[in-house]
Length: 83
Image 1 (spheres, rainbow, N blue to C red):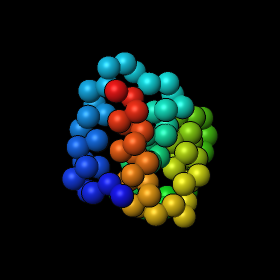
Image 2 (image 1 turned 180 degrees about the vertical axis):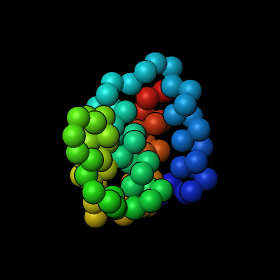
Image 3 (image 1 turned 135 degrees about the vertical axis):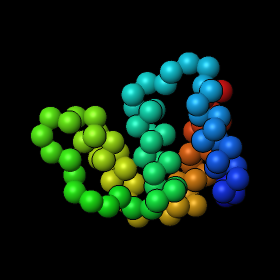
């Protein structure tokens, strides 16, 4: 499993990607980061026409039940695969 230090290093590296990932990959990065750092999603699902917020919420909610350690490792692996 990735250590908290490896996770933070990957988060820093994610800002230096050689090219912009697809929206699908960006949502994966977001949801894994949130799950690893905060755990299961909380709060109500955004409504209305804020489609970006809805997509982010849904991506994070899809990871409910995944341990923070698992999410941390998957995040590090995903960031490393983008280089």
